[in-house]
Image 1: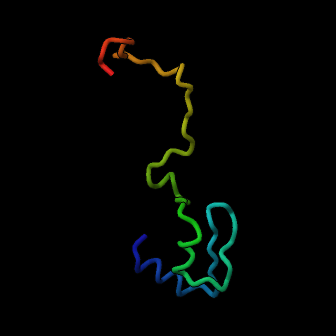
Image 2: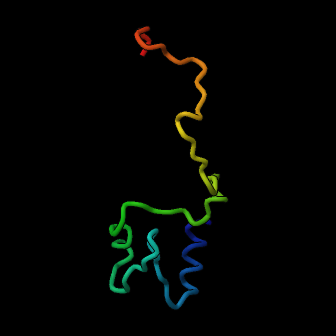
Image 3: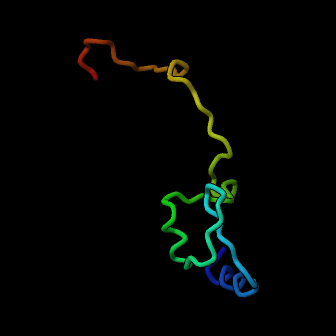
Length: 77
């Protein structure tokens, strides 16, 4: 979405609300520039559109196979 498209959509709205990543709504008395100051984390709501996988697979270190590991005392680490 381009900036001009965002501006066009905003002009069609009577009210706008901002929701923080933790689910809380930004209070009405906040200025738009203050909304970003309330948290240092932002969240993409369209992850599937920007290549971020929906779920990250977690592995235990014991499950990760190493092919070229250093041996203790070999001096390679």
